[in-house]
Amino acid sequence: MGRRTLYGTVIVTYRCNARCNMCNVYQYPTNPKEEIPLEVIRKLPEMAFTNITGGEPFLRQDIEEIVEILSQRTNRIVISTNGYYTDKIIALCEKYPKVGIRISIEGLQETNDAIRRIPDGFARGYGTLKKLVEMGHPDVGFGMTVQDLNADDLVPLYKISDEMGMEFATATLHNSFYFHKDDNRIDDRYHVAENFAKLNNELLASKSPKKWFRAYFNHGLINYIYGNKRLLPCDMSRNAFFIDPFCDVVPCNGTCHKEIMGNLRDMSWDELWHSEQAKRVRAEIRHCGRNCWMIGSASPAMHRYIWVPAWWVIRHKFLKGGRYDLSENRFITGPDKQE
Ligand code: SF4
Picture 1 (cartoon, helix red, strand yellow):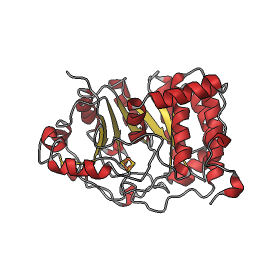
Picture 2: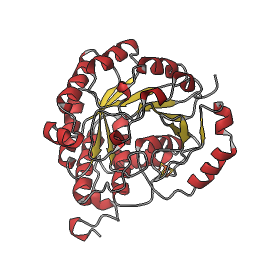
Picture 3: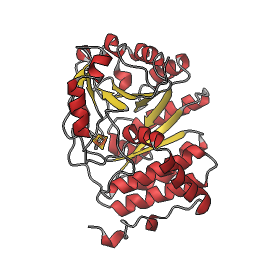
Picture 4: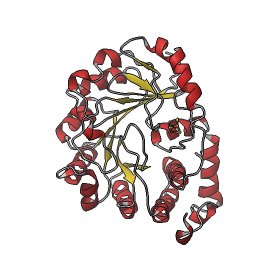
């Protein structure tokens, strides 16, 4: 087995039982009979990391078989879920104890349920997380997409996750073909940025190097919210890809239109990855100016250009005494001076 370097995201379904305000995927559900089948998942290449996502991945009846196939060709799997289907999630984690689970929770109960619009969503998601922690599942955490409505819950939610010994993954609003959205926006950027800054101070004060690097990722989110150039180059379509329920391989989930590199039903992985079509998409994406900052594209970049976040961590953790201050970002001039 050669060195695994690719980052893959497998969107197993566009069906979803939630109705999140920042994502319209639920309005365009896939037909279960037409969703990426196991024989196509078997064609995927060796990967360093695979994210299984949706829609809601646990709506797939064959999610265990999907995990079984992928666990043979990837070093690490993380499933993003809303945590509603507790029994299915627990059963899968009992069978695959190394699989990571990230449950999207958008704030404390009231805020979460207002954003995700899933009956009893917070109680179900939080209950699943608690059970996973109680059974000693090693890789479990929250995922939160920060927006105006929930920015105040960011640090309180982090503290809950920290007390439970869990990971805490952050994101912010994006627009793209994937979300079927073009009107997601943050109105009070400074307020949201301030909350990310508070979180960064908590993370930098911790003893966990992983959390220090998460602070850098959050710094990138603030930079994105202010409409700046990405902190790191984007190498999607070269060292990372997404595959959707229709078996279309696309560079990422951030473009406004779907840019298809090829359909994996029709050919082998090698044929697709080295095809003229894939090369054309790569050439276009090289000039992509969308500057997204989502974990799917930022994480491979942080690994590839590791010295950039590493130097940022050294500066903030050791030279600045663990302090992160918004005013160090020259583009942030305070709440009154936003465009
Ligand atoms: S910046 Fe990267 S992740 Fe975002 S749309 Fe462009 S290529 Fe995709």
